[in-house]
Each structure stands twice: as C-alpha cells, then as structure tokens.
Amino acid sequence: MNRYVWPLLLFLVLAGFLAFGLRLDPREVPSPLIGKPAPAFTTTLLGHPEQTLSRQDLLGKVWVLNVWASWCVPCREEHPLLVQFARQGLVPLYGLNYKDQPAAAEALLRQGGNPYTETLVDPDGRIGIDYGVYGVPETYVIDRGGVIRYKHIGPLTPAVIRDKLEPLVRQLLGERG
Image (cartoon, rainbow, N blue to C red; front, side, top):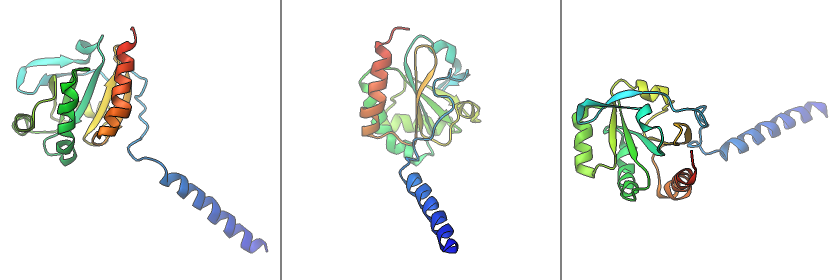
C-alpha cells in the first residue's frame, strides 16, 4: 500500500505546481524596482546629440518611459498604440532607444510617427540594465517623486493601456506630491 501512495502523492504535488504555474502571466514578471526610485541617468537625445536629459530633469512630473529599438519587431507592432496614446497628451512619453543605430531609430520615427516627447539614447544598454530591462519593448510609469510605479514587459496592447496604464497615470496625476 505504501509503495503506491508515495508516488501518487508526489504526482499530485507536481501536478499542483504545474497547474499553478500555467495560470501565471509571463508578462507579469515582478520587478524589484517597483516602489523604488528610478535609476539615475544622464544621456543624449536622439537627433540632438549635443543635448542631454537626466532623471533629475523629470522630477516633479508623472511620465512614461518606453524602451524600444528599431530592430525589435514587437516594438514596431506596439508603435501605433504609442502614437495614439501620446496624442491624448495625458503625460509625457519618453523613449529609451536601446542598443540601436541612431539612423535606423530616426527612420522608424519618421515613418511611423514620433510619439515621444524626447528619445533618450542608450547605445550600450547601460541605462536599460539599470532599469532591469529583460528585453524590448518594456514600459514604465514613473511618478512625480521619480519612483517607478509600474512596469510592463512586452508590447503594450489596447487592453493594457486602457486597464492599467491610463488608470494609474490618472491616479498619479490626481495625487499631490
């Protein structure tokens, strides 16, 4: 009897773990940066290499950071949604052009429209590493105090923008800080 019970129990435990794991959303990877200050950066701007922007320059405003690259197919798929989101004028949308060629990035923005208030250049990926980028695209919501409040891995969808991004941004804009 005992020799049949143990394998059955082991099977049930493993099946339980598998069932639990199958319900998890792979885009909901917990970030250790949520609720913590966004990493500091100072970098040049795409198309204006003589100008720089830093995290410090953005303190006091709610903003969204979208990490993208012209070589990234999901980024190209997401791009029209970003253009549409930016047209609302709800918050400034900053791009972080990740490990890309400036000419290719500029061509994509000319072709598809430029949703970004400014595009930060991250040619070696150091800023992306500091932000814990797993891969592009990724999107962050950062509050007035410079704290990361939300991270989305992968391309944004209309549902994510409508159900997560916009409500959080509206909530943060209503806060006094």
